[in-house]
Length: 184
Image (cartoon, rainbow, N blue to C red; front, side, top):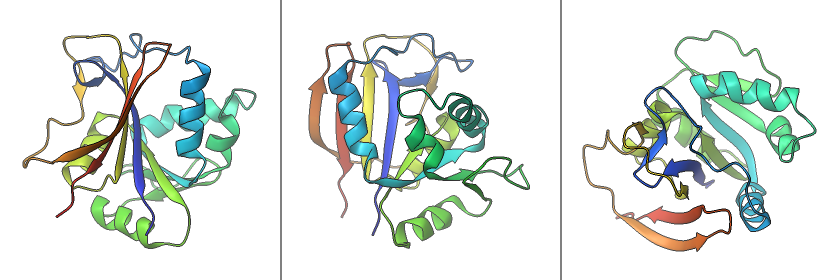
């Protein structure tokens, strides 16, 4: 069965964006070792899942900047956008998922193929976490505390135990925390 990986940048105090979606606190000039790590976790991916809000900026950004490092992966990988408001996809190589989140993700996991990676805003990622759908967490912890913002673990109604696979500090200041959920 395919794995669903989550890759997300977070503040040291647990937010993925400021209260109004601000991302000006994130480290964007990644060192080569971090770029290599992200390349290694995305190489075995042939499907990207996104929430609609992030997709509306993410997909057009990469399509408009094919010269940027990583653009080939994002532009050429099949994408599934989870939405309740869009009726048709306006993007190449992208389909819409409008059904139950857990059912749709589990159907994707059962399909033939490589791994799946999730990118998204706080609501989408929180829903994936709450329903226990993430198989690997790749949390890129930025060396900044922002005090308030959009968390991804606030909607849990039960404790989720995680096992640390590895922690890697990078020269750019980001520390990777790679976790897997403990499954019973």
